[in-house]
Length: 504
Image (cartoon, rainbow, N blue to C red; front, side, top):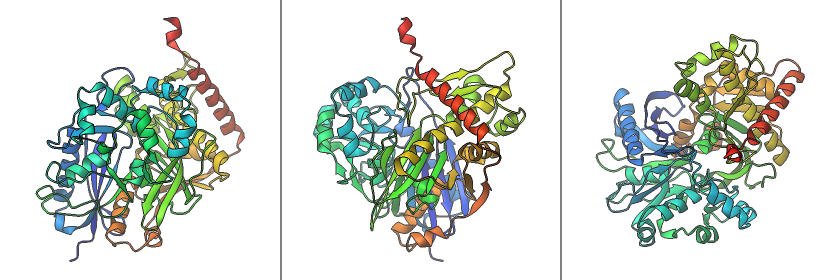
């Protein structure tokens, strides 16, 4: 039988996953493994890149073994990844030269403020579609070059390589020190704050301002195509890596948002709302990002994106930080056990606020607490915060694009929570659609790989594979949701006004 299965490697912020799909999108197997989060200082977040590679390889092998499959059953491998997280490694040995600086890390906030004071904000936005923020890879890499002894000299000699997580995994998958390919795709490159999204090239003006040697950067190419064969011995056989995209762009693709005006929202560690704008890179005046959705042989597709830093991670904090829930699965019943959040608003700005506020100094807060506040109220407030932040993004997106989507396609772990999706539909006044396969990030990577090897002929062929599991329609009048949203906005304003250093 011809090899027609697709493996997706989905390297996320808290876990590495591998999924195997048949050509119709049905899941044949899945393997997942969490890895360690490091918080060396307040506001700093790090990963061990070697651990990420080890966990990703392990789950890929397990996904094959648990389904009784071999590499010969795979038509191709697709890769999707947490974006912006920054890795530098030794070209000769393959060893990471520093901890990976995670997208959530705020250590370069002061550097970003300095770049703004230099008057670079508009120029960076015009070239990259991004705002100057510690979220993106550019200042993370500049910080490493300044702080790691000898790194700058090694980078200038071409001995030290930079990449976001996709590049790190591509390099290891295709041989590492023994001929590994140093590549990225347009979607991931567009998240570095170093890539000109109009010229599709690394921007030398920005590289010079940040002091980054171009020699350490990967080659950027379209999201579907030849990224190299997996090295011998990794998967028991060599398979073509044929599709690569950042996780949120992969989810947009996996949701079948192939036409301008279609939007999706992913509820993961963060929350990411993307709107397909087609061949036009629409500039934002409302605090959103202009980004590359994907590159295909026919050209590049752009998107407007709103990025919320803390969404599902707020629920994780309730579990791991406060210990008031044992698992995320409990939250739906707890939220439904009370008629409302009891006037409590949770602003989860643990690492600052993303779009549309872009406040690197904001910090999390619970407001409206009384003696009557209970555990269910806190849980409900955390879920409602995810929905409020999504409305922040949709309001800004509609202002920028003039498009008000009639429906919102959703995915990610929290999309399994019926309470959240119904509250979201009511708050937005639009229908929320949950697909049959909620792991659309991995599915999008698989679809790109399928396109890359010709398993799928075109986007129309792929669109027929999307299945909706449930639709959540808005209920009731707009008065109550609008009132709640106005109170949320007041809570955000209160959070942004808090500066503990004033008392020092």
